[in-house]
Image 1 (cartoon, helix red, strand yellow):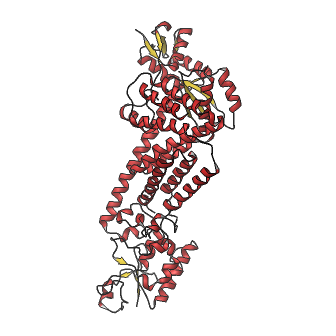
Image 2: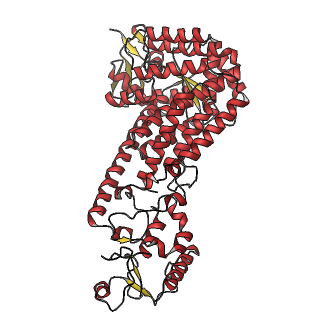
Image 3: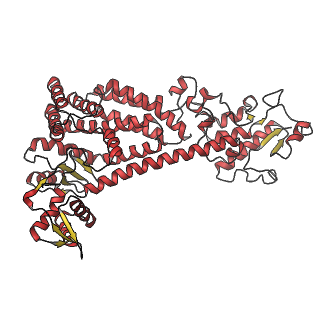
Length: 119
Length: 437
């Protein structure tokens, strides 16, 4: 089973792949130094990895264990303006207001045509 | 001015800007539209009116925004005795609508704060970018505030966040080796940072929250956000030279292409926005003296015509609100008309005008709507006794008294300072009736 993880979540996983099972505190400290993340940001990402089945936590000390090896992970990337940040209607309303949504191939072709015509 | 009046006049101004924008979007420098939106924002947010003989409201010979019904007086305007003079039903309606309005503001504010907070949380999971190109770019583009470049897989389009420490956030799909295209994208974000566009967008959101009930303000929010982008594009093209506009437009399109993959889904709205944007970029022309003069003329003209209200001459026939049982007596008190004329310029609806009207008013009587002089001993006067009445022997005495009260207010004193004896037994928080014997 392949797990899809975002680049930020991969940063968390790479600590586990490199250093083996470590407490969440350790990951947070390391990534604060490396990426400038605050502790809560790292904890949020660890929780997301747990939800996706990539990390297993155990007590005591919130020990983190990687459930998937590096080879089985695919890097996820959104093609939405903002990935799953909003839920349902809030998402749609905001996206509509900002006027940022995906375009179809035909629409992109039309845009290129506009540039060619006006050039 | 009440909130509804502000929203109404602001709405008319927005309509005017929408029309101008539709007609001249590719003819004027984009800053002109931004200026027009800022004038609209100011009109929507300042609670007083600016009188002008060239206002559309003057030209129409009316004072439409102030001429409405009692519903116009939704917000308390600070005149003591104002509420007391209104019938109960109106006072109740006022509070109901105020509550509905405040609830709407709260809902909007919570929605936008929540959306921003969620975004912010996601921004923080971004990863710093460090390659030769970005380091080089940053060393050239450093300014007072430290800019940094980060990337995230959770956003598909470049964006900027943060005011004090601006961060340019690039999608993970960014092709760092494509330096030509990157230069355009980063320049675009750099212009946003330099112009504090995040603060402009925040101001637009605040206005939207306050005027949530006005659909035209929502239209303004969408179009003004687009015009911030268009103006930014224009600055980038001017910086790199007009002959780069096709390359810049193509860089934007290829970014959209990376983003969209192969989804057939799209809202027509955003399609219009991006088409408008690409067309606008391709039609950027050299700024000429003519276009600048035209832009200046349109901005000043629109502001004068739509952001102002009718001036005193056009607004002299101010009707009293239907809820009050008193009428003005304009013929007999010309001095008051002159000295307080300024209050009538917004249609006579400000606090000053209302309280002044009440004080210069006399009770309505069946045979003379302006109120014939009332004898203190008459039956009618007896009926009114004890109802906050002050008597004068002549109109001159009364007017002199009004001037003295007004002078007190101007000096920052209590309105009735020096007249304690005269107002003994008078409840000044309720409307006071002045009668010439």
